[in-house]
Length: 165
Image (cartoon, rainbow, N blue to C red; front, side):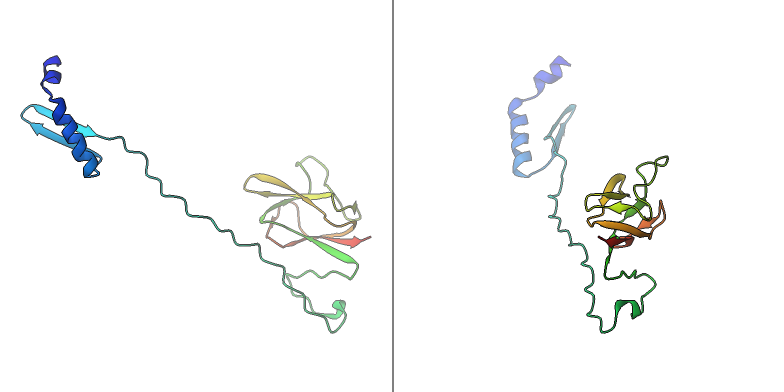
């Protein structure tokens, strides 16, 4: 094997390497009799430059038209939840799974009749294996829980009704 290595002309290898660079090849191989020379350059994994990611803003809540009659008299669609003038609705800020308590064996964060402040955690929404605490962002008393525990929820879906105050 030592004789084979000595028979290789280093100038030929340099010349092949130059051809490799000039032709922008990854590998070149030359055979002459029993002499075989292969020159290759390490190929870095080709990663396309990541395209800039543009996130669409979350859909805005539809603006409520100015009611010509009291809100209670307006017909409500099946998916819409109406609130009285002194009530607020806590909605889901994301798509995920709604949980009323921090763990299956723990008591719920809140119940109907519970008082909440704007910083009170009212539930958890699991999204992509991440548990996200949802805060009331309003002070008052919970009058209605609109979602069942472990139910899938959508962005903007009503979760709780709160009587402000």
